[in-house]
Length: 454
Ligand SMILES: [Zn+2]
Image 1 (cartoon, helix red, strand yellow):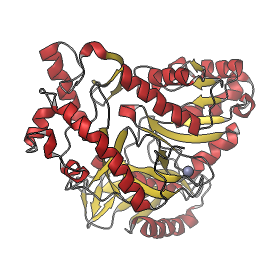
Image 2: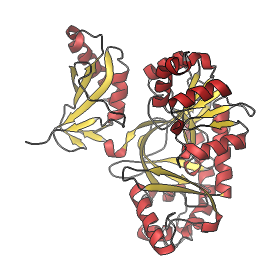
Image 3: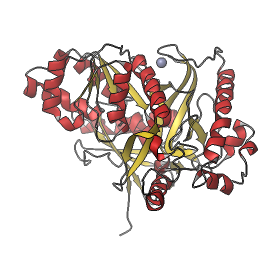
Image 4: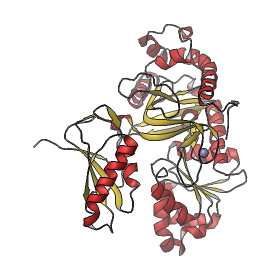
């Protein structure tokens, strides 16, 4: 893995060296986006900055408010459509003719938010994703199989092209191909690595015997690369998948504005290594409530503000991602690499505040998942009013495991309360309910239920 030319093994010195690297590139990038009269210059003005030179240090930069987020991104797109006849946003900082590649995420509104790439943006993206493929153990010359959604998604065509640029021969069936075709084509093309979401991997395990007459272990896959959903960070999921496929599994993020991160395999999960520190400042952390900067050091938790350091087309520049990240700085307990890693703790809009303690539903879910198979892993957090403020205790409903007798439920509840207190510093009130009694859905299940006054 990359060390970005930094050769210290002191966490404080390491971050200081990264910050120097960042600010050296940011000086140019600040001046570059400042030239965007339609959007970024206005955001600077609002923040009281009249010239790029006013930002004298990384500390100055970190004190700026967020300039972009999902909602503003969409508004910026609508305005550019109206004013210029293209949907790539008023924050498009390069001439439209130079945008050669487009990806998007579809939000809950159904309106896409676009990622635009110039040739240079795309080349750097391919190099950053190349680092990711290399870290997963994929070599140029390997056959790879792409089963993420292809339709405009960043992990779609963008990944396929990056695999080609890396020389790893993608078979691009995509999730749209459907399970039977994916299974038959894997059997036929014999890839070494498979790119698929956790839920698709589950479906492949279940349906392989019926569709191709053999278990997925017989497919000979060595490497599984996952993104798009939580799962890989949870031990029971990892154990099930690696046992069924007989393959190593990696959790990745990447593609957006030069970001790239990957977990490093192994029995325990130690977060995802940052692979693109030289092109992207992905974890400028702020307090999710006050938006004040949080010191970046080992163990820091906060909302991530993303800034691409040398992106041309429509860059993330102080983009509030809504992700709550925990940052690790130091030697990785699994692979020994010295650097920065991150864990996704939750979403800023999911945050609960229990008498001053910040708690994320996903973190509680992870604690509970550690008790499988005594529990099913399904939980609900029941609030008596709208978040984030919660009057303690936080009420958590946990579904029993299929084979857990009712006589053990109280004991399981007390142990989950105890473990939550050790890990998250709050003691919830846990109630165990029968297996199958919490509704499931294919969509991302809402973990919070708010009681309505009747
Ligand atoms: Zn590692």
